Image (cartoon, rainbow, N blue to C red; front, side):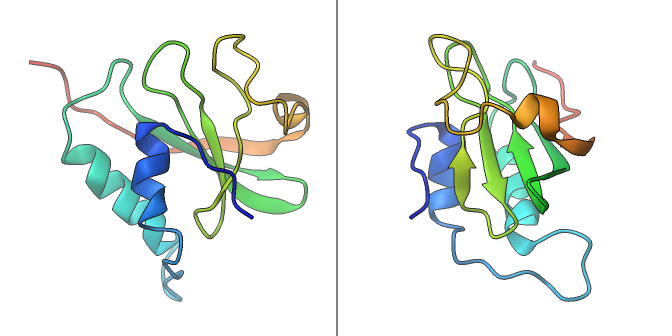
Length: 118
């Protein structure tokens, strides 16, 4: 059962959980929808970003938290939340993927909101 978080990112993904991957695309459909949704909202502080990496032999996506004391969320390739590797009141996430920072591989930014606040 997917992990549920009450954050802006989680609400975006709630509607995207069943999105399928395009066969001729580098990224799953839900990633494109995530970016489109973020770009349709006011600029976050810090700006929203989405990273991709390998974790426990699978491709995952790390969505940064938009402010203090909120969870960053790790999603699988289908857009389902796996865990919160960091953030929250303790800054240590939800404890379900404590080894993420040490064991992830090929961590790269695939999108960062380049807009500025007005």
